[in-house]
Length: 236
Image (cartoon, rainbow, N blue to C red; front, side, top):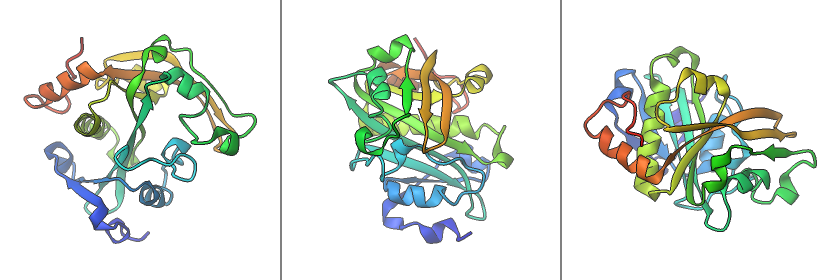
């Protein structure tokens, strides 16, 4: 595989410094061009395909409304990925955004398969309006799992989301096993976040909704300034 740093256009990428990631031998890169992100993740061994809500051919992300984080090891090989985007839900809510498939496709009538479906029965999703930051596509390479990197990258993503957008809510859709194992970076969890079928994407999932309010995200940032990244956030 071509070395990652040879693929990247450096002018579009910012190197993040984090002591916890560096201790694991990981260099973090922050980018904003999702064409570039997909070109990298598409050829990353063992990583599942990125969902269409982060693919510019299905759901373009305007400048300033999305970012991605890539982690590379000492050989400049990809060790982790994560992405986030901002949804303007001032006239709707997250549940409706999911069920209309607008969360996944800019033009569902054009890009969605006739049998594509998304059902959201998590009650709190209907209360999520305004600026809603969505965090997804989290992946950690097998040899780095169990090291705390997933928690580290999620916490960093929360910092970046707050700095860029100060959203009203920050949320993710995750598998039940992840909730059972514990997701300390999110204060709230509900089942039925997205019972999802995307035929052409070969996606069939039943994910939980996990989230923070804007106030909790702000408190988490202040908490991080004096605590370890692996410490649980301050939730109310």
